[in-house]
Length: 73
Image (tube, rainbow, N blue to C red; front, side, top):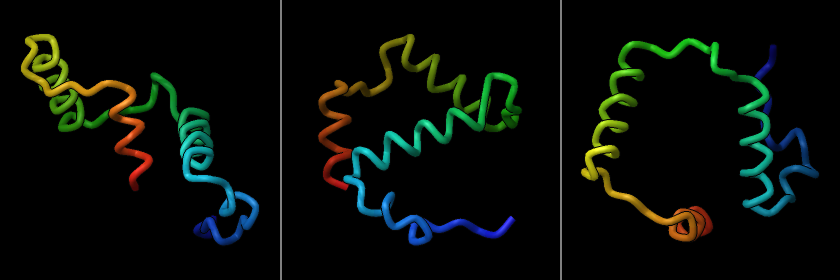
């Protein structure tokens, strides 16, 4: 399969960043599911972050802050 570039889809390239991110998320979730394999290293990192979150050691941000940070990029 040839590499697909955004330039090949001019209508998509013209969408605002937020809409492109929403589309990327939808495409991502259409391609993966809970049965997708996770490497041992990635599982370890996820477990570490989850435990830090549960202990209150992880830095948390609000959804509004996340959206603000994403809109700057």
